[in-house]
Image 1 (cartoon, rainbow, N blue to C red):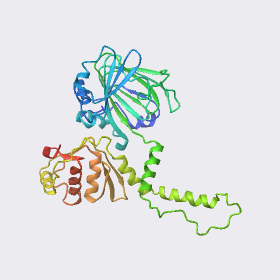
Image 2 (image 1 turned 30 degrees about the vertical axis):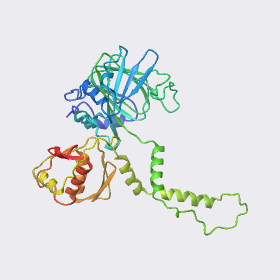
Image 3 (image 1 turned 135 degrees about the vertical axis):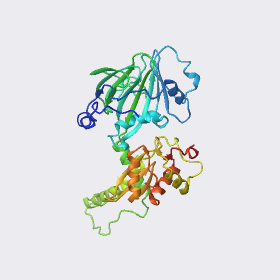
Length: 390
């Protein structure tokens, strides 16, 4: 697993001085950097159905975008002009790429989006742009020149290209050339532009999502509305005669506003909804669900043998505390109330990508039932249990 050298990066200082504040160049902090994916493997993924891939070419007139999956012969047909291949969620497909997330888990898991991988020939890039999320740009192979500019927003002028959303004007304030193992952190909104310096340039983008206020309001309100009935209506049994029938009185506004706020203001209900919402997989097709459900007896047998358990990299795990003795575990949009040994297991699963329980460590009952449910959901698997994977 890729790890940072203990003296190379201080998460607390980073969060204090840079997180969502200003960019940071981190020169190769890895204990022993090794590029986790070959260019040919990335090209192979871009050809597969269900994998989100994009090919950007620098034609003489403009940058053009082609959506995947791409036919294998497409790469042989590329001309001499610069081009870039982008593949989303490679961490869901390649364990060594998923391992790149580990050093950044001082940031909560629910903020993690995925690891996008790009490959570019000399001069290739996606053009000056800005994103609405935090990203760590890890140089895996070759070299890339990054330029970073000012903070942008929805009013910043863009070129007339809906698909790429490139900046109409870009003036860099900082510039660096990244070598293998180097990392550039870019906060939301900062303009940036990366261009390959030489061929075989690979960059791993560890992205972190941040819900927009509008998305939160819309999603939560839709959920609340789904649970309401037509009988739940405005009522004013103490209505008094009005001097002017055209007035909407303060009393009426108070009642109407209270109806809305009471329905939307249930924090516990919001927590349950957000746990399910934020743990819903981005790419649910990466499924480990067994063709035939694993039985409790099979789980007992494998636990007795000390068989390790591992998480599906495409699955999302999170929990919310419910007092001192219970948590609500969320996995892939499902919720599981947990107490006692099941609570301890749920918290350990959220903290670790891989578990090696000793025989007898996980007692019979709810904890083992939780393991059974998560395996049948496709979020968890026994390492030796290849018969239960697709």
